[in-house]
Amino acid sequence: MMLAQAAPAPVHHFPWLTVVTFAPLAGAVVAAVLPSSALNLHRLWALLVTLITLGLALATLSAYSSGAAGFQLVDRAVWVKSLNFNYILGVDGISLFMVLLTAFLMPAAILVSWRIERQAKYYLIAFLVLESAMIGSFLALDLLLFFLFFEALLFPMYLIIGGWGSERRVYAAVKFFLFTMAGSAFLLVAILFLYFRAGSQLGHSTFDFTELQRLSLPIATARWLFLAFFVAFAVKVPLFPLHTWLPDAHTEAPTAGSLILAAVLLKIGAYGLIRFNLGLFPEASLHFRSFVSILALIGIVYGAVVALIQTDIKRLVAYSSVSHLGFVVLGTFAFTVQGLSGGVLQMVNHGLSTGALFLLVGMLYERTHTRDLGQMGGLALTMPVLAGVFLFVALSSIGLPGLNGFVGEFLVLLGTFVVTKVYAVIAVTAVVLAAVYMLWAYQRAMHGALSVPDHGLLPDLNLREYAILVPIMAGILFIGVFPKPLLSKIEPAVRQTLVCVSPAQSQMVVTSCPRVTGSPAFDIARRP
Image 1 (cartoon, rainbow, N blue to C red):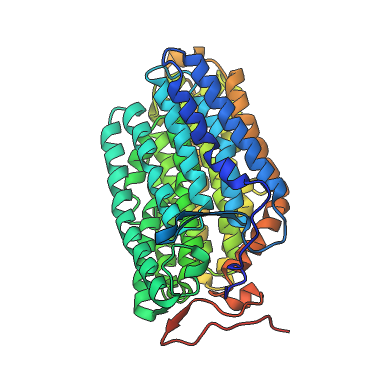
Image 2 (tube, rainbow, N blue to C red):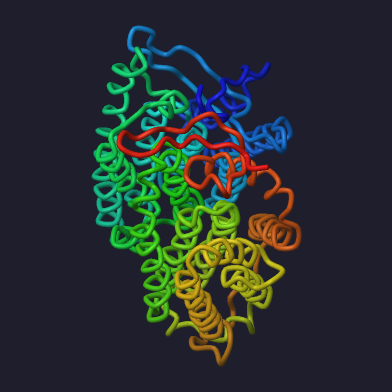
């Protein structure tokens, strides 16, 4: 292997990654044979499976070696020998916390869905299948395997939105499915091209990510392949102008669907940009750097401005996701350790903060039966604890120092500022706008006189809702006060990712990086 990251890792004595990936799917198979009428049994089983998966994810964390840059705990097996299809899973500091975030939030998704009765069996099975597909997407190191996981998550999410969503759920589900499938078509063509190109250059066709990094591609070819991967992942992030499916999907999805869609599914797009676009096409990444950064800036400002004018509180939070994910992409294409580390950390932060906001919006809707801010007001008088939690999470979302949102946004802005000051200054305006729309929404919903007399009889948080929100709030506070345990594992993987795109930032020793014909080779070494 030419890259340090590409060095084959020995198979771990216990296949942690395979077990954590397929544990939810195994749980879904068991759930499928349980009687549909046993609603409580299905709920308890789904909760137990997600808690077991969380335990397995934590075991993976304990087995992971801090400070190492390459892939660890690699599970490898021959899939189809004649075609050289392989089953390869691996984890580094970037994918590790995406898996942990997924496993951490899935029990909350099950708990918040506790009262769903209509076809509850199939609803919970869809979430278990979705969890396996999401975790597999973060761990797959074979491009064909990644594509299968990437596509597999579409169907359960389509069912969740279209089957258990609001009035316009079918429209939102179809729009989500079509946008993502259109992007995936480009991705599949690009993956197949790399597979056959590997056959002519390496002597054997392969989808192995670490082997494909050895390919030598013409400049124009590499750039077209970059765009094919980019479109698929930009739809999923989503980046402006490919974002239009997101507000509808969020607004119409059930609360648990909005939670997982915002907290995890969007991160698969950002993760794909980091892992595959930067990892396979470093020269093209540099070439399109300004283009992608400008799209990210437009999304950052546009999402914040549109959130300002929303009266539907769920739609407001949905547009805030467009803005926050723009920060992730901006940090990624700054090509600095601070920017990319901040982008990865911000993916975790957004999952916690915006996920909690969607949970709170769902809890408000259960009580008031409205998402219209004009029909709310004075809710803190009857639900003081819920109001306090809402304020805490809102402050996290806008980046208050001491909470998790500040750390990620600060690193992104710092990493961007040292490269392009104008981009950082423009991005800062969205931080100010975020404070305006989040605090405005909180004020309209929680303060003032009761807009509806019946709202004075609404209950505060119950025990189940405490169990959902308290762990998320603890995570928000922990990362805000002490982010070092996360950053110590993220940064080595970030430096490895930047080794070909930004050698001065990486400061790592490698022999060679993916080459493009017609440009200088990317041979680099640590400077004394």
